[in-house]
Image (cartoon, rainbow, N blue to C red; front, side, top):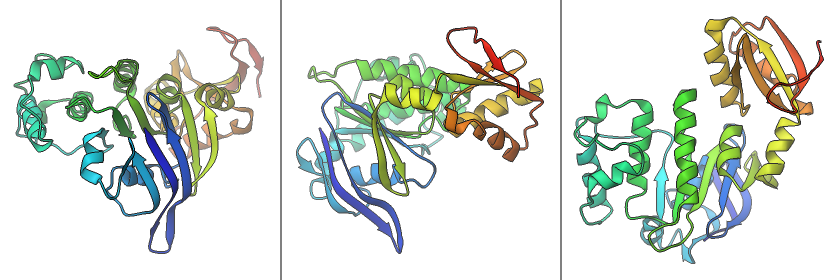
Length: 302
């Protein structure tokens, strides 16, 4: 469905994407993983035809640079930063974007029920929560039932609860088939391990614009979790902020009574503590444990 061959993108002297090649078959779900500046968003913008590049990108056999409009009709895109007219109602926004896409006026109730926004047609966009705005953006991306869905760090602005709900919605959509009976293909950028675990079949790790690893999602998650868990003790008011900053750095942190549990790889044991220190979050204590089941067995106390 998507074939990327030796794509390079430079901004002046800086190389954002460096000779990248990979492909997605129909129904595949591939995550782009890497630190900020690794090239994830640049690759996505090249696929969308928003940037000029060297190399070749084809979507369903069509050239993304030469046949940009036709390619974009096959793609539903949800960006990290949303841009809506806040004075529009939800229903008006759906109809407006349907016209932009050259589609027949849709039944807004049916469109919104698919993303959990049923009954919200008359609500003004300015009155929506962040999670509801993301659902609206997804509903707009799915207008016309495109076979490809591209997402760029779409949960970055959501809190932990909102992220969990949105990822659950995406997981159901990834498993569903389109009107033509075809499986939807998904390409998304993320730095959250729980999103990889829920949505991806493969993970491409990017560093300085190059692919440094191409792994099955299960293998990737095991490599990053490593069967160990760090239990970090914090003051209760700081737990939510700690979870957010750790998840932004790719750790699947979760709340646990007196603090936070963080699955870690052996090679990344020091990272959660450094991340919290950099965020001025005070750590009272921590333990390293195995995680064989719901109640990990304590291994050692540093």
